[in-house]
Length: 362
Ligand SMILES: [Zn+2]
Image (cartoon, rainbow, N blue to C red):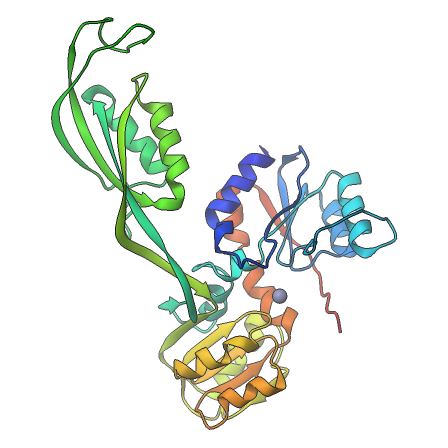
């Protein structure tokens, strides 16, 4: 059982909201002051999924598609959005949506979609950005340096590849003179003081800067800790829309269709082009991925799998070796969205249930 602020913090850590498109409304839709022990995942928000979440004892629904896109001027109980929002509020259910913040995450929609084919080395199909690193340098008395390093590591510093707690320390002497009004941990007012200190250096993703500063303030024994933060040129975790990757060997048509059926739970709606060939390089965008056909063709994908294709966008794939597989919007997103359940359960320590929605507009 945790309060909602803690749950939201964990979800935003996993799938930061800054990665969403400018036109999107990923994030909190309805925030109530509730304690959470069960989270319901649902691709869409419908009255049926809210009902299911209530019956299964959830206190928050995390959906993929947001309930609110345009500015809402009123909540009226006989409109779709109004009825859903009112039902959530009456039943003390908060609502959070991670739409394109999940689509554009390096371990989100595209990643899980390609994992289903046994692909390990997965990159974004269309790169939008990457995470810039920063370095924190903090000066700490020797007596407290281990504790501070541990707190900084927990806040997200010192993570390099498969290694955590990476730090560099040098010993030196820190000097200061407390002035009137100070409450020094060591030393007296108007007397120079020198302390054996360590200079601790750790890198961290720049979007965790707030957590890093908070960690210093919480753990450092001094009233006014001395620290520097440097922005680095180093980047990690390129992120963007969809995913692309190469199968370690290749798949034949039957293997491909079996993977599709077992992961997405359905057969393709339509196949354009030739899939009777060894298939190694696969591109995937969940949902409305028609705009990324040209990226898949340019990257020489053997096949490109997505939810929806506009007829005229098939032109980009004509005369190329990229076959196009259309799954249907909801079918292409449902399994890769629900694949986040374990990560959310691990991060929040809550029970996570999956709504059995089979909602399709048509
Ligand atoms: Zn969608």
